[in-house]
Length: 201
Image (tube, rainbow, N blue to C red; front, top):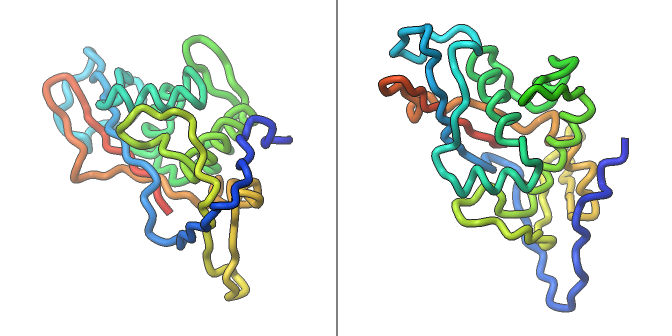
């Protein structure tokens, strides 16, 4: 499947200065997802939740951060909210793991297949790598093409990824970018559950 048709190509400039970033201990995003606790349950401890029917997504605590996610797709906040629940309840730790566990997903009465999921996660990862989509300010779609990521590969060699190698890096991150619930920042309050979700490598 070709993924790169929507990606923004860098504009060449004589003032281009590479920004080298070591792919190690980087937090790409952190969101606070707020869920309504289903009225049929009386639960006041996060450890007591066992299935998705107990938690109904309401919003991300930052309206701006939620609106920024809609750059990916108007329903992407709903999709990411489902990823959060799978991370919370099933221990899913990567976008690839989430995707392969789904034959399909139904959001707002619409059914989506695994290819759709992978495409949207690739596009989201692209923005996480090269933009401020996860920032707390309104995202204007600007891509920073000066970033060059590097890491030590399996052959003990330093491997570099400029934006020209974005497809290779995004495929790598689709499998290796980590998802986790930040327990010390997650809590319940009355009929709400606030779940802090972190994306990092």
